[in-house]
Amino acid sequence: MFKAIILLRRRPEVSPNEFRQWWLERHAPLARQLPGLRRLCFNLVDAQASAPFDGVSELWFDSQQDFETAYASDIGQQVAADSIANVDHRERLLVEEHLLVPDSS
Image (tube, rainbow, N blue to C red; front, side, top):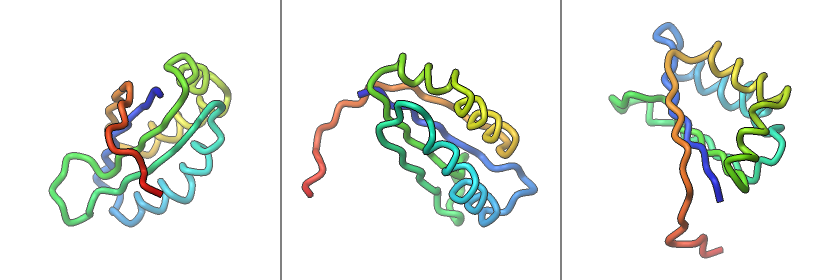
């Protein structure tokens, strides 16, 4: 399983609450439409923490090729443009996931 981890830092003029609202209510519905997306998780960093990022998204695909195809699509371009327009900085890590403790449910 291929996973992209994207670290986001909100713009300085955007409050943590505004960032949360944009990310979960506007950006997430776009991201959910990515073709080939197997799983999606948005992780909000505690607003009280002095962390360098405000959010961490995890996107799972069957392969890196599926990831690249998704972001080359029209919706993928919209997702990327929306992110770039609404964050101060982002880092993208492309990883191969190795699950060591599976979900017990």
